[in-house]
Length: 102
Image 1 (cartoon, helix red, strand yellow):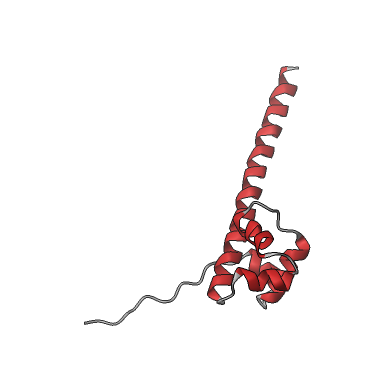
Image 2: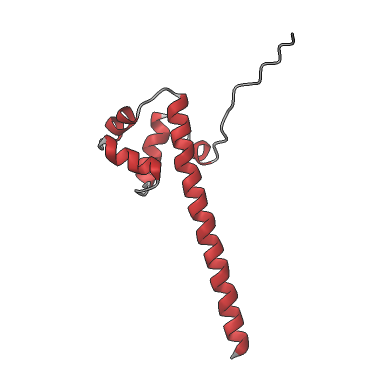
């Protein structure tokens, strides 16, 4: 009986860690979407219109108040002219530092 409890506790702990990891990953994806949108010079209104939703609904996606559906993820990638996998694995591109010397 004690072994069963230990196994169940460990399984539960792993599940909690996995849920936290997925939540963090989802937050990173919507954060990256905002970064890419801003880098491309797009306004929330523009993406909302392309997605056929209100600006308020789009804002909720970026803020994490509304879930990003798979369909919307694909649509956003298409608007950004990116593959979905590239959007999911996005690493922010920062402009190179100024290497000029005095």
